[in-house]
Image (cartoon, rainbow, N blue to C red; front, side, top):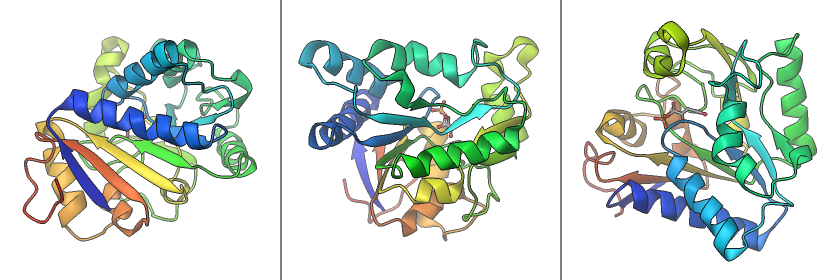
Length: 246
Ligand code: F6R
């Protein structure tokens, strides 16, 4: 796993957008796995700009989202369906038939998880997986302790994650469960790009990069990946010791 440190959030966002755009220029039918949250907003903004001003096309790409809250209908304002539509899919030329977000309102969530894994397999696997990182080191909604061999499944969200995400929900009550792509689902991606910005991610970043690889620190799994890179701003890199390439 390589780490690259950029001066600030805008620089990470631009660099991440170039990674995605470069991949699509090379192979327009690439399969991408994408995160929600605050961190990727700048990358989505840059990609939308590239679409509008430089003609970058997403029409042949396939998209999978990492996760969705369980129990939220796709039109719930805090759902990741709505987030992705507002910030990305609704602003580019994505083919709706090739956009996949787990259905948090599926009557049979276990079957939905299987359907999701099957759709990823049918698409030929993930080429580029873009990740954020939780303050506790989660990736997707794989909280500490998530088995490295896990696949897309229903998971319980940790109290700390629910607290961080509470503001998106009425009475500050985030859902207790989610559907997430599993650790092995992520690991099987041909390449992985993890984005982290801000001092509140510095502890998790340092633990993922420098402590032992352990299921108690989900992002540390990426150290065993042959093509994983971290894009950090200086704040997110501030707890790292020496030995990290700049
Ligand atoms: C969201 C996701 C999460 C976030 C993480 C960081 O789809 O998979 O793992 O990437 O919680 O969230 P932000 O970017 O809001 O700090």
